Length: 252
Ligand code: 13P
Image 1: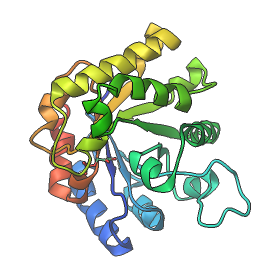
Image 2: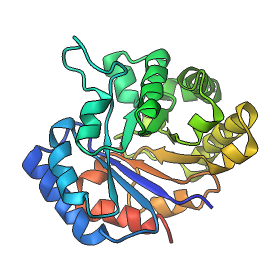
Image 3: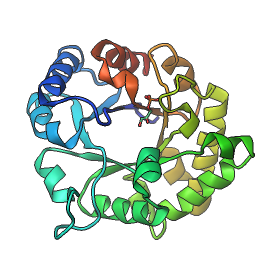
């Protein structure tokens, strides 16, 4: 049985004070909730302050990215050691916004996952197709390429430490959620892919999250699907009541 995992990706939202206010509200409702693993991914600037508030709770901290070099002349980048210092245990890698706006390729994503694993993080590795790709019946092909590129040279023991998030680009921030069936189709493909490239026990342990306009109202139907093990939540994670409801609705 895979334990549900609900992660909030705050993207480029919340100053330190706003982040502290949001996470304090989450803590009041979720501090001892243990039917799902809960992760919040604030912007880098608020990591440290958020960590201080959640360190005695079940809520874990994640970064929205990390760079694949350990240190050096890489202006504007943040290293694995820096986010570890702030208390991060998870790191989102390969989000479609990173791919689209910042030119991150499958090769870069692969390097980031490798470094994240070396440094003991749980990578949340994102894959997903654009609307054009879906309309041209390219969804499975695109996911296959992203999985091959992102997971190149990974061993079974690495896969056991990774979480995969399927986020159809056309469902992100649009209010247009993939139907549970559409999502399940791709989740099933991902699990089969892992089974074929690794093993069935590895595939059965892998947690695959769905992301794209997840709300309190649609999480239950998504979670009913056999291969959906949780959610990566954007917009709705910025509101304490909405995120708390998503977490609570994910496990019953
Ligand atoms: P929304 O929930 O705002 O659609 O964002 C999804 C997402 O990109 C999470 O990483």
